[in-house]
Image (cartoon, rainbow, N blue to C red; front, side, top):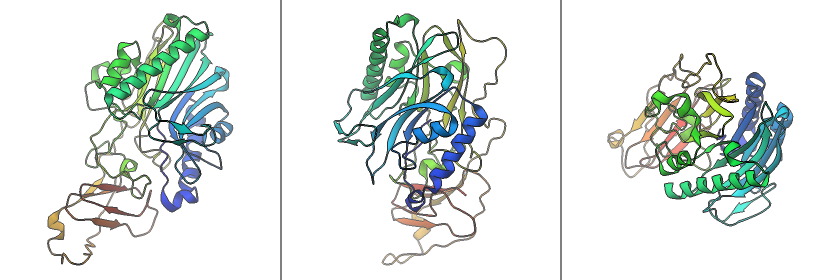
Length: 385
């Protein structure tokens, strides 16, 4: 899961949002007990450069992380591996992938990139049956699909060298790669990774629906039923105000003879315990260990709310006609009628006019991530409650 490193104004200086999300992650790990968890954009927490250490201690997992960016007063962004202790996480390492900019810092306490840095965090685990498993997580930040493809080529090469170093025959070696690839199915990057032997776990689990517009992990269209209000959350830093088409950009890839995905579900598509967990949705995959898929039936929904769809949120569109009665020389207060919002996807304000528009939500209760926004033409912000 891309867990998002946004600083949310005053709230995050008090760590209100981070405390809530941290508690929610710990509860989820206790309830679901996943064997392996991979995060991208893991933020700093409790005075540590990454929340990995605090989370591992609270949930009873082993962990390893490295920063992609982070310095006191700036955003912290780490890639993280968490594994249950019986999987024996060991020999963890990090590598910079192609097209990464130079950077300063140790990557543990701070790192200042001089441009976009894409790093892969990798470790070795032991599967049931004694099979070694190489795991890696990354957040591709190449500018353009060709550069992202180069980065996945580099990651594949790194894992092959790692296997050779550990005297593992590549044909018999299992590898699991999870990450925010910032690339859609069918793109050059994803296609190339498949060509060198990595299977897209969600696509394997849902072979009849690969071409469908389902499995969305980044829902930035406020008019769509898969919309995630935190993808355009008001008041976030850095600002995320550009609506975009729905997309599946977060993946798990697997290769090797001993692992096969038998179920894969997009998770956190609704608030968890009343809280949106991230600006991305995550993926939860069950793998068979051994020679092939496990027998029997395993639940394999597309999303964690297939049986309980929430529907779209409420989108308020501001057009030039909205300002038609205003004096162009002064600010115009357009306070309108009460709008009722019943969807957990909240209220979005979409500025389709040629003017700058501000919005503020007032009333009882709490507004996330902020109660106000300012939008240039073509921008949008969302409010959740």
